[in-house]
Length: 400
Image 1 (cartoon, rainbow, N blue to C red):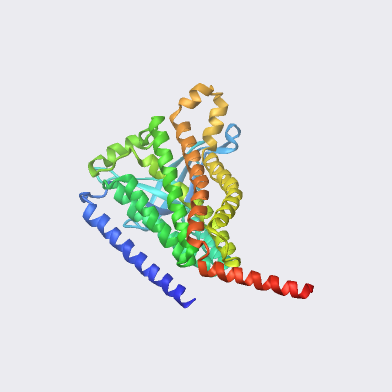
Image 2: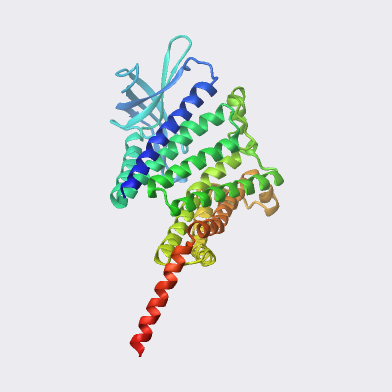
């Protein structure tokens, strides 16, 4: 137990040093972005001091949404303009529907004109406290219900997100090769997460190897099918803007589609890999004399059960995220020929299939690695055989 605690502490220390080094390298060596003065548009928290007039009406054609305009006085509550008040007109429509009442907390958009005049408008509701509250509830429940492993799971999740948002994304932005960099970040976070949660043992080694191979297999499949179907990152809605904003800093868009699939498949693949690895480890612990062939069969049987539900989970996750699109396609009665040719539909299908394929291929990978790593040693098998013989002799004596 003490050795496992030491290993986890060393892992946390090494992971912090590794993250700090990567963060420094990406943001200092790779970062060639010139310092640009902040634009004339800023955003700040604000509060509605007074509702001067309200000409809005309920529109039954748009599910009871308010439409019209409001005259309000808002007060900026942060930044260099904190305490300043402005009278503005808030326009409400079916798509932009921020109902401002006295005391409503909002985020204001502040535009400074070339002549020094300030224009303030309503950007959106201030949702910060609610989102932070939801995150806090999630973290608290994970730690309380999960105990020590829940705490380590939370730390590993935080570490993964830090690497994605502060290392991977800036590295890709500044021209790092997309697929090698993404795979590298996935492997590092994969190793660190499993060690944090369960230490270093046969179970975690098996899970790490299975997860890595499963995710890479999903990426290879997505890359090949994407090439054959002519689906690339240029077909996304953000491609044009990325080309304009990022072309001077080395970002290449072609493989962003595959990189996104690698990241999205990671969580589900880790889940399946650890489930199979943990079950195989329990089998080996109960019967150390199990041969590699028997362990492999057991791992495959366990994996088949997990594979069905997790594949559904990933496919349904993609379907749920594209529900608006699916309903729109249904409403327009799009012909099947046109549907197959649509870039957006092709991307969603490849994402769902690739992620699910990663889960499917993880099963034999984990079963194989587990059978090789956890197989009984000669000493364990001999000890087990002697124990079985001793038990049989005792049973014979009792029968006589």
